[in-house]
Length: 325
Length: 306
Ligand SMILES: Nc1ncnc2c1ncn2[C@@H]1O[C@H](COP(=O)(O)OP(=O)(O)OP(=O)(O)O)[C@@H](O)[C@H]1O
Ligand SMILES: [Mg+2]
View 1 (tube, protein in one colour):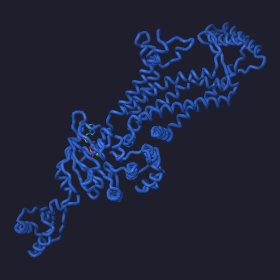
View 2 (tube, chains in turn orange, blue):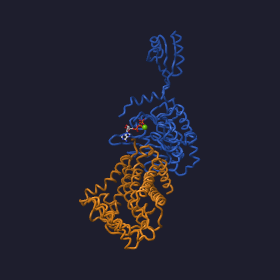
View 3 (tube, protein in one colour):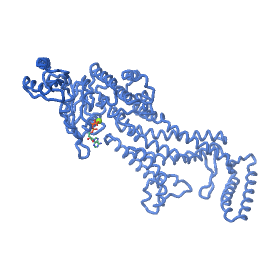
């Protein structure tokens, strides 16, 4: 076992000694900061802080919004439409606060972290790049020959590489969470340790715990991340080319959902990987991609794909000759 | 003879429909430096890849210190240090980090051992530089260092003299002889240039088109023909040729102003005396060793890559 840990250590050393890896962290940090600055300075009202007499403040706000809507709809027919939508939903939300006697939560570090869940797709992208290179690069550098003539089975070498990819994804995720929280705390402050928000779920408002929602959102996006990284890892192992693995995995990551959209009228579409990677489709207030699909079905499909990807990687990595270029 | 360190038994490799290695059988003994000589494409690298388990063996087996590389891979490979083809290292890491990386893959390699190996190959000065900036010769040394980390009892070096200058080759020859003589390591060195490995090997196996066509000991020249080829620059050359043919009773070749004869070493003074005695003008005498090189060329004939 200590032997295996040393193999993983080797992979991590090789990863972090390269500038490219640090650039990935740098890019993620820059995006987070940029996001924070944009939210701060393009204040769209969501940053309003409510004081002790928040009930009156909300009522005032509602009056203002109603007035705005009336002015708009008299000015222009189509311009008023979107204003009506936005203001309308804000008013409804405000009414919900009043009816349920919930003091609106101020936008703070927690909410910033929650909203940054979307950045998990950036982590997916970087993890794909790492997974795509981790085997293929050894072939490119020619070092695979030195790696595989040690008293360590090929399976172990491969497993260490795979674990290293997952470790990288986890590290990035931890970085995203911590860095978002800290920059959020600096720029927006922290409003209590048990924040909640009210969101619109299919026309109905519900109050949600932000921390719980954050964990859920990030966990759901990890499903897609792990599947795509494993896919890239497999391509890297089979074709021994990182370019191919990056290209295919990123293409599928972006095109996958549209493909499912195109063929969703067919029954077999539910067997496509991308119809199943978004487990959020089964949460409250959402419809599954294809009628009749269930969480259990998707999880089984994901497991089947996962096992196939790893088995193919294993076959390609352990059973084939390491010959010339 | 001692128990062989490595045995090749009917080793064959077929890729697609092409039989690249056509049945190799030979043993390499502890303390011996074995030269694996053959023209480009003969199958040296392919054989080495099978010896270290990078390629699957189609037929036959490689036995390393009594363990089959096919069925007891870990036990067998523990005994082996190798460079296969080029000494490729992680270009973005220093020489030292590269060595530490490979040291982590084998239990029991101390930092002292890493330092010792660095000293052995003379890389102390450059060891903290990135391997990507190394010259080919420095990479070759780092490659050897990496192969020696775990004190293997068999060292396999694929074209270690490739890219080295003459002093580099001399140094490598020196370590290799040392390892074999002092530490009883069995060393296999491949090359396509006989002159480069002749001086470091005890035995040389010549491979061509996937077959061993001769295995010779380098030092027991007595077994080989003792005839030397002697070039004598002499005037007038045609008469000298006839004279020599009459006294030697064999054919004498002429090359421009030289006669070329093939005689035993002891006969050389007599031949010169006789020429001088007959008033031929002798301008120079060159004795060509009948080297392995000739033999090598003779054996492999034209190198046709199939
Ligand atoms: N992966 C492969 N697929 C098909 N043929 C191959 C493969 N690898 C090697 N060969 C063929 O096997 C033969 C032997 O190649 P090998 O690399 O073992 O030669 P070598 O003796 O090491 O030559 P060199 O002196 O050029 O290094 C060549 O004819 C080569 O074309
Ligand atoms: Mg070769």
